[in-house]
Image (cartoon, rainbow, N blue to C red; front, side, top):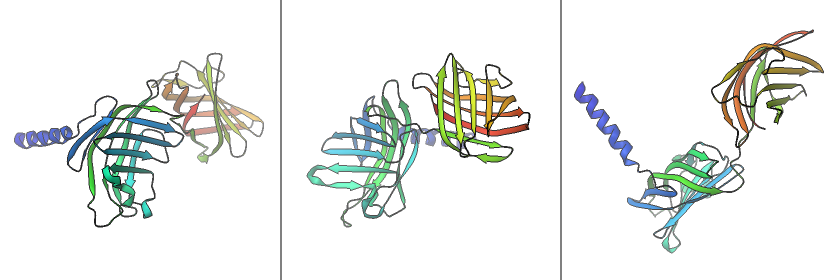
Length: 278
């Protein structure tokens, strides 16, 4: 059993070492069996990321079309080379070009993973791989393996962080038509206007960091209100937990639940979560 465990460990280590992390600011990969690396550049805008580099008559272009946040994006074949959520393109000497989009429609042929977007230093990191195809059917596919990009500088207006809200009122799911945040006098208030124009608001101290939580009760430093047809329900119990708070980019994410009371009765808000810029 010890021998088997040791063998598994050695195999695992060997697999991990197959992927060589690019130097800072560079993109690297094995392209058609040959090592390739170069300085990288990137652009992040609302709902799009592009990362590229050129060296030894090869240009690699990675594009994510429907997001500009961290995550794993499947690269699939598409009819006529049209893109799905993400695409990898290789341009070579002599005008030869290969696309993941030319793969069989709907079939996953690779992936792009964004592991870090450093908004302070304006860099992006991640991994990629894929099987690329030329438009000519007789041309063999090209495999890109072990691709990495490490703290590649980016420009553009992004990244774009979508706002979100989810909760239930007495077990009924709520939908927000407008999500916004406000910072004033040492407090942050996040508000969610529901589809019927009712509003849930949560107020808490602006120094509440990720991993911290507070109890909601009355008009304490942390409390919630639920306005329903001009009737104001005030939290009498509950908990707010901050899961992410970036005071530089002014974005906060968290989970919550509370009971709010008015003369008309009590409402239980459960399974709450949000992501808001303020």
